Length: 316
Ligand SMILES: Nc1ncnc2c1ncn2[C@@H]1O[C@H](COP(=O)(O)OP(=O)(O)OP(=O)(O)O)[C@@H](O)[C@H]1O
Image (cartoon, rainbow, N blue to C red; front, side, top):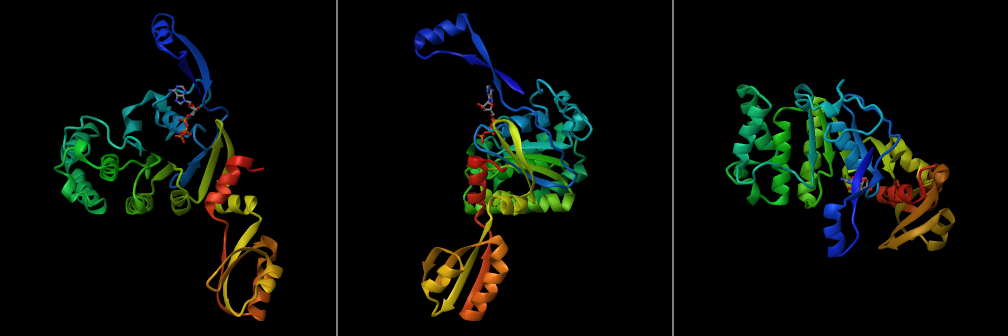
C-alpha cells in the first residue's frame, strides 16, 4: 500500500508555492503483508509507531483501497464497502471513538445507528439494555457526545458499534488514554463480547496488558512487513531464553542464590534470580531442598521487555 503524500518545504513562500505547484512523493506504508484470521480468534496486531497497523486495518475495513495485492474479508473485497459487509464488521479507534454530530445525545446517536444498520426494534431494545448495563451507560444516554470524557466516549463508541452485533471487530488502540479502571473495563468487555458472540477480533495496542490479557496470538509488524505471526507465549520463549524465579526464604544467603542464577532483585527477604529456561526445574528443586522456602514462583520475563527486544532486534 502506498500513499501519495504532498511534499512541501518550510516557510510561507513554500506553502504558497505548493498551492500552485503541488508536488507529491510515494510513501510505502505496508508491503507483502499476508495473514489469515480464523473465526472467533482474538489476535494482537502490534508494532512500533508508524509500522503500518492502522493502514492495514483501514484496508481490511475498506476505508483504503490497497494499491496492489488481494484482500478478502468475510468473503468480500472490503474496499467495495458493500452494505452487507459493513453490517458485519466494526472499526473502532481509540483516537476517534465516536464520529458524527457531537451535539446529539448518546441515545439519539444509538437510535440513528439503529436506523442506519437496520437493526430490528426488538433486537435494538434488547441490545440497548444489555450494553447500557455492561458498559455502564445509564447516566450517559441523555448527554451530548461532545460533553463526554474520553473514557465515556470510548464506552459510547463501543456501544454504537456493538449495537448491530458485528462478527468481526478491528480495535485500533481501544484503551488509548484510559485510566486503569477504564482500560480494565474495556478489556473485560471485549473478552466477554468475543466469548459470548464468537466474534473475531484484531486488536492493536501499545499497552502490553491489553495484548497479554486478550490475545493468545500475535502478529508483529515493523516497517510495513510482518516479522512474527504466532503464539504470544512462543514469542516470549523464543526471545527470552530465561525465566525469573521469585523466592522468599528464611536465612537464604546471597552466595547460594548467586550460584543458582543471575541475581536481579533483592528486598525484604525476597530474591529474584534469572535462570536459563532449561535449568528451571533443576534449580527450583535444589533451592527447595537447600533452603527453608516460604514462597517460590516461576515467571516469564515481562512482556514489555520481550516486545521491546522484538522491536529493537527483530525476532529471528
Ligand atoms: N495519509 C497518509 N499519507 C502519507 N503517509 C501516511 C499516511 N498515513 C500513514 N502514512 C505513513 O504510513 C506509515 C504507516 O502508518 P500507520 O498509521 O499505518 O502506522 P501505525 O503502525 O498505525 O502507527 P502508530 O502506532 O504510530 O499509530 C507511516 O510511515 C505513516 O507516516
